[in-house]
Image (cartoon, rainbow, N blue to C red; front, side, top):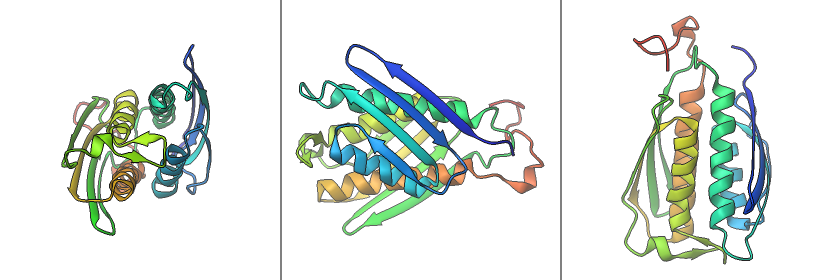
Length: 201
């Protein structure tokens, strides 16, 4: 399988984001978004997907973290799509269930080229929870949806159980990462073929 490294940039009046991703890395990360809890989640994403990830983002976080979180997720999605190429030889599908104390999240990923995101199970009120002083619970779904749509992924993410907002967010990011890792892996039984009856993804 050829080297799978992608880069992308998104520069707007609200943020400036530059991303590099290596799908065949070891989970190393160099993350700086100005939003500490988001940095923590993106570090977990890299670590558990085994993708090396560099993110440099500057944004108007003095107004709200929303623009920076969203634009960073969009840019990671673009870089991932760039890196995965024609998807020849990959497993395509991945699934994972990840616990964190009382929280349990399940993610299923299809590197389908058809963007779709389904997210269920978060408790009412989670979207308003402030995590780390800057990051609201609603940003978890928004970030992962923005990443998935712009990478061309079909994702079903379910929170099975959870009470603590930090644990919920981290379990969801890690489940997504582990499922993505599986879907991106080379499948030696395909002989390098694109895993679709259509011959294209």
